[in-house]
Amino acid sequence: MKLNPIASGSSTVYFGNEGYTALNSYLKQENPSKIFILVDSNTLQDCLQIFLAQIETDIVIETIEIEPGETFKTIDTCVGVWNALSELNADRKSVLLNLGGGVVTDLGGFVASTFKRGIPYINIPTSLLAMVDASVGGKTGVDLGVLKNQIGVISHSEMVIVDTNYLKTLPGKQMRSGHAEILKHGLITSKSYWDKCSDLKNLTLESYDAIIYESVQIKNNVVTKDPKEKGLRKTLNFGHTLGHAIESYLLEHDTKDALLHGEAVAAGMILALHLSEAEYEFPSQEKEEICNTLLSIYGKISLNHEDYQHIIELLKFDKKNTHGKINFILLKGFGEAVLDCQISNERLLEAFNYYKNL
Image 1 (cartoon, rainbow, N blue to C red):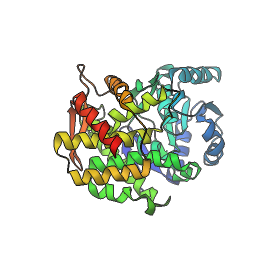
Image 2: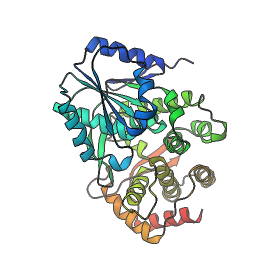
Image 3: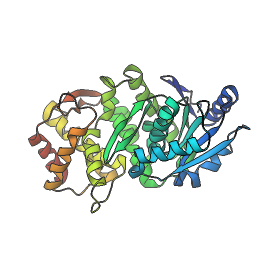
């Protein structure tokens, strides 16, 4: 099945081999002074040679490696990459190719957007999460300590190349993490898309081509209408307000196991669905079915009452907050989002207790 390119802001998302054709045309036409490829130690080993085999150019290529994982999505890592670019004589005609998951595409986009006040960059996402979420929409940035995505800019890549062959290198846990964003797209869009994506037993790597394409379309339709996240784009944060707080809380506690982004968002979606039923009468039976599906895929995080208080305290750092108010995204039903909802601490504790007793 041919998947047509998707225009996304000033960028274009290409699928499969068409992406490499577009990349080679870009390199020939723009003739950058140097090509820099940002990788982490995983994509250096598993993806770089596959990618390099697709590039047709005589331009000098340099590789910059960073450590993998959310704990290295920091300004310190950016400084290391900026220094490497400087030492390797990058100039404003250089281009940065980000080959990796969400940490690489988020951080690489931010590095490129700020180095010498901005050099062009291209994203080649290698994880499911990055393909359907992180590399589309122009959001770039890094964490501030354990607080997610506090520093960054909205700046579109020249293009995005989605090649699902890279998913063959991905551990199952990382695939499940990325799938949480696809399930979120189902909840904020339509029951039919949820039904298509929620039965993981019948999904194969081949079937992901169409699912990723539809998920990119869903996200792109939203960000095209609201590029600066003034309204509609906030719906993409369903499950993320509490999910990010849980993820941040576990990151800062060495005695607790850190979560992948999608695992935390899955828990956040269960909590948000309970709040949606309590505040906006989301249908109870559908809520139970969805929550059971999410639990069957992601399991349950072990949290106690003391943890709840610390997580609630972290909510004040969420990017959607305004005028000192914590703003949640909730649902009346499939595809019926309610923006900027304020929730009492009592309600939040009820939601945590619901989650604990599932």
